[in-house]
Image (cartoon, rainbow, N blue to C red; front, side, top):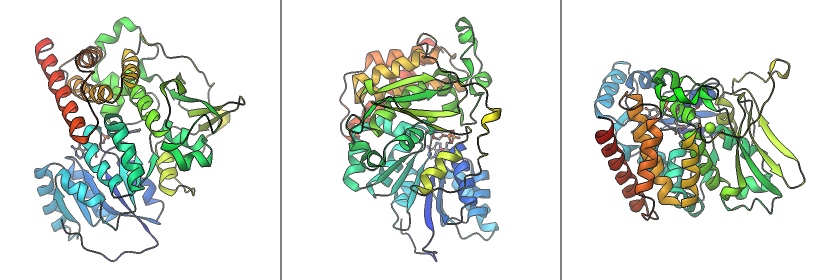
Length: 408
Ligand code: NAD
Ligand code: MG
């Protein structure tokens, strides 16, 4: 794809948003709306051309890319009738081309699932400032992803609220050396990864098999896309975040501890060898980590209401009950097993969650499918990108086979 140079105010930072029509994408645009030092160079999305049209009309990006060809066609003709100059493309490779454009300063990686891997890696390979919401891409490619960050001098900033919180609680030296850093040398004894426990923290475990989709996606504190909402209910989300933390902070599995904090006010903590614990707090609203990462190391407005301590209920903390959340244990086991296992668990979980969301399997079947796929495939090699894509594909095939055989 040939990129034209448009009239650009060079004081502005140009942003490309992968997944602009999703929960994180919409929040990112809201932060940009309040901060004119950022402008939108390109927006990309899956199928929602209606919302993409509205975003293009408001933010006037140079480019818009849909994954789906029909949606791109509809978007193109609608934009034409609005006399918009935004150019429209479709396909993942168009997304990969766009993030590499020299005009792009910042890439927000907010596609859901493995579909985000290639465009995110393209942004890393182009040495961009990459804001990582798409945890699945790091979980599935781990070492390869981090090696590329180092090799191409990309700046990787975490958007996941927990990892953004941890990042904020690290010494500046560790923030800079991040994925190369040494927690012990920085005096850090533990990363405390908090999680709310989701909507079923107190529900009778014996009734979990009858959980409906509506119940599973109704998170008590956060408003998010459907896949991550289900992951939060099973706590697979915390498992994926455990793996994500390992890579982002060069941590070993023993450096990370999951703590249940149902109020979601503390977003995670870092414990130091002298007994100090630094926590990052705020109202649960993703615009805070997005604003933090967009402007880092400066601070900008996010639109999030300041935390009112006088109206905050008690803070409570417990250890996770792994019999209630077997997916969390599975992901932590996969993290110990190594790269192929984490690629497998991510792929199996995407298939299982999608089957749950379309009412093909029950809520507790998500774990059964994930565990079976992981048990069958932990020993494959996952070093190169081809290996990883292969392991991902085979895990999906096996997950589909299980669903068709056992749940059809
Ligand atoms: P979402 O479902 O609301 O949005 C997903 C976005 O990806 C949409 O724009 C969709 O069109 C796009 N998309 C889907 N399939 C695509 C494909 N094949 N090609 C291109 N684009 C595609 O999801 P979300 O809640 O915004 O989450 C996005 C990512 O951020 C996930 O990886 C999630 O784990 C992570 N995250 C989200 C939150 C949150 O609060 N929502 C918090 C932390 C991390
Ligand atoms: Mg999170």
